[in-house]
Amino acid sequence: MSTLDTFKNEFDQRHDFEDPDIQLLYDRHADVEFSKIPVAWVMPIDEMLCRFRYNRIAKEVRQEYGQLIVTFKNRPEDQGRFARYQSIVDECEGKLRAIDIDLHAGMKK
Image (spheres, rainbow, N blue to C red):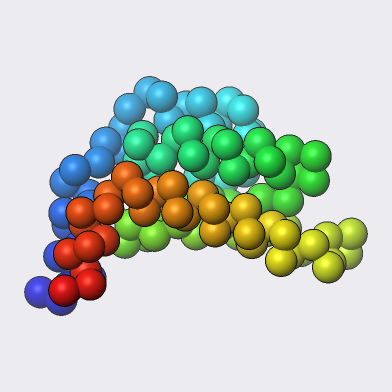
């Protein structure tokens, strides 16, 4: 089994993907699609999306192999702002990485 697959298995085993608290994201951000979000990520993702609330730029937020993936809408009015949007995503990724710091440290070995 590859290191990435091992990480994914450990990540999936430690996280709850069915908790009702995940509904908060669906309720507060109804225009965003969500997939495979663990409950431990709800607050950092909500915070990130609230920072986008005026622009409503996020189209999809999902998790794959323990990594955050955010898809933006590609609207003409957002051209030139993507670097700022990416910095907000990067900040969120740092918070999410801290939740599983031991798993990420194991990947560096």
